[in-house]
Structure formats: C-alpha cells, structure tokens
Image (cartoon, rainbow, N blue to C red; front, side):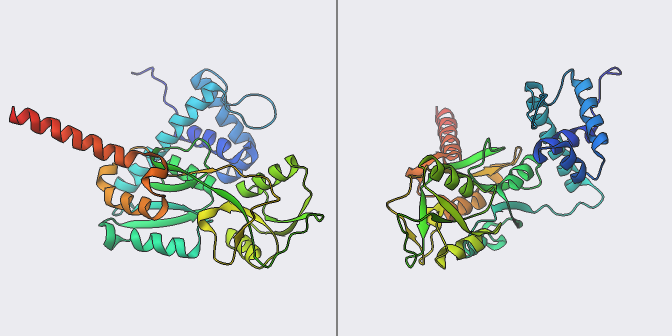
Length: 313
C-alpha cells in the first residue's frame, strides 16, 4: 500500500474540464488557472496512468485510456462533492436537485413545479434550468440528481425512461411561404434545432436566411408565433399560435428524450417524485423506448412473490 499511486483530485478536475469545455484554454478559464498549468496537470495524469488522455491533432478527442479516465474521474468528483455536501463543515439537509432544459415552456414548467413540489412528493426538491450539455455535465458530477435531457449524446447516469418525440417544422398561420423565395429561418448557432434545420435544408438544396436569432428558446418561439420565420421543434411543445408545415420542407427525424438519474441515486427512495416527473414529461408507456422505473417495479413484485411462495412452502 505504501507504493500505491494516489491521483490528486485537481488532475481529475483538469481532465474533466478540458473534455467538457473543448479546449485547454477554456478549461483553464473555468478553473481559474493558466493554460500551462492545465497542460501540466493533464500530462501528470497521463504519467500516472501510463498514457495520453487526449489524441494528438485538432480538437479534443479522448484516447481509449482517456475515456476510461473521464468516466472514473466524473464519478470520483461526484463522490467528493456529495461527501462535502452531506458531511462537510457547511453541509445542510439534502435537497434533491432536478435539472430541466432551458427550452421548457412556461406552462410546462408550472405543471412540473406543481406536480413535483415538496408537498406532493414528500421530498425536499430544488429545480435548475440550463442548457442540455450543462445538465449532462452536472449529472455526471452529481451536482444534480435527476435530469430531463433532450437529444443528449451518450447521456450519463441511469436511464429512468426514454422515448422518441416527433420533430416538425412550425410557423405562424399568418406567415405565407413563397416557393420561389428563400426560407426565413429562426434559430441560434450551436443549438440542435439550428444544426438540424441547416443540415436538412442544405441537403435538399433549399435556400434560406436567418430572419431571427436568439440564444433564448422563448424568444425564438415568440419570433415564430409572430410570423418571422420557421423553426423545427417537438410537436408536443407547439403553442396554439403555431401550425405544422406539412409540405415543401424536408422530413425531420425523431428526437430522443429521457429522464435520467445520477449514478448512486436510490430510485426506490424517490419513486413518488420519479413517477410525478415522468407523468408530467413522458408520453404514455406504449410510446416509450424504455421504462426502467416500471421494469424495477415489476422485478421487485416478482421477487416478493418468489419469497412469499418459498415461505408458504
């Protein structure tokens, strides 16, 4: 044990920060360090683990060793945060943190807040709205317990339930599209709907221009409702002042949605909250790709029946 290597936690923070921020410079800024300091920490971690964390070349691409290191680094950082929260000098009674994407609509949020309040679920609950990638990172770190994720690539934690949502082109009924004119597009660079719209329109050789751009989804939705342009979105979050464009634009793929829990969360202790949340967010069970909450309930019931049978015999 005396010769066992110990990995300092700052090295784990550094490799996660580089991966999440996409560059050494941005990671240094996020951790309030210099870029050479981050580089030195990543190099030191590579020495301890016996290989490089990121592949050489453009961009930040983890090596196979780096992928394993990132997976364990996130878990170890999450455990560190949880230990400080539960037993540290400033620890307080734990509140379950639910993460929701910032694109959630006004009425949707009200419904979720009401269904998942402390009084309805016997849980002390805190809500947080943010961009999907931020929620993914926070779920990995354990700073949020449950998250509703839209089109998350390689989502972390435990999938409570997953389903597909129909994506459609929408516009205001008062917007008349001219087949001979470029398509007015509402969007924001970096968002999934923007990437999807541009990709589909370019592949179909359709000309377009951005009639409105904003990072806030509520602003983009307001622009569509006002007749400024078109926007791809899940059909379920359309508002009455929008209509589906049924012809003239390329077909859109379905989008994967899901409710996920952080690693280590005891789902049995929060089953009422999970039920309320999935009830507010997910479609009917027949339309879900996976529902691990229902699967766990059935398995628990089967185990109970087996124990009861043994007791009788």
